[in-house]
Image 1: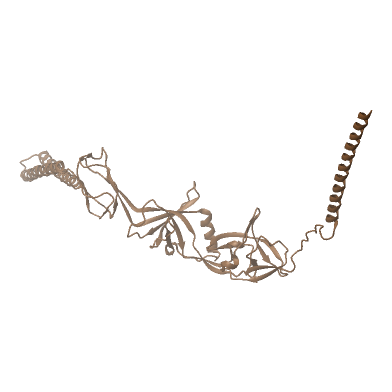
Image 2: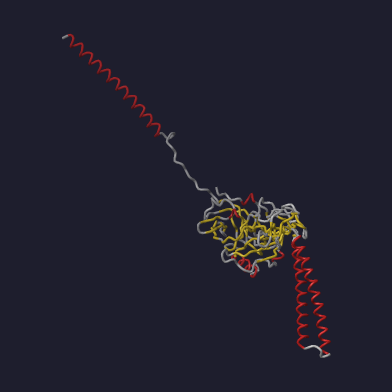
Length: 412
């Protein structure tokens, strides 16, 4: 009995201990939750709503006032350099190549000896033709004497008429033989001259195609080398038919100065961006348009005394001397490109920004030429284009259109 009472006492003490511990945890939890509720609901600690305030007053921008002006147009085209003359050197007679009298890639003068073909066979042919001429001349002399003899006999009625006719025919044959032999001599002299090959122009000679000792001729390998004239050099480029028509219409309407093409200056821009020191002049405009490309070829002649330019180079040809009259331009940074086309912001009479569609022409320096959409006196916004919205009140300050520091766009 005493043992059971002791066990019951221990159970009661353990239960009381658990009850006290749980009570303490509950009291602490209630206190923490109450303090948190007080902290969050108090005026000093509740989160304040973020206030978004609209900007007050007009938005400051820079603008330019449109003023038509005459501007130089310097269209630039991709061009290629070409020699002003290309002369292939070919063997005009057959024979063995005896000598080469130049260094490949050097400048050769007009009339300078370049190749020699063995002349001996042609000297022999010339002597044979000269001997044939002597024989024909002797036959002609005899035939002429016979004609005179038969004429005298015919007058004395001591020769038949047909004998005189036969003598005259023999004289004509002998005379023709003399002319034939003289032609043989001329041909032999010509062939002998062809054994020395001289440069027909002053230019740069390329690689030789045949080595000394090779047999060359009309029925074999006849191309020996090529000479190219590089001073002056040609610069050739193509212009689309649309540009040609547009320039013609603008010239007819007085929007472009009417300058003869031969008076235009052609400046060559080198591949590294530098400008070639010698200017060229247009010397050829193709009358036809290539139907496969829709372009016409234009060619300029450019002095090249130091042979700085080489045939086959790709350069840019910049044409100077054309002036666009009363052109309207805006800085490129003032133009926005949208899916429907190019636009600018203009300031209307109520100082509100309005979007204006425009038609772009070509670039001139840092400006766009405007073909339509703007008129003289329009006020075009040139900065803060990403913040400006149609109908926004703006406060504009007029600036010089050439001032890069005040017309820079902010597309970020």
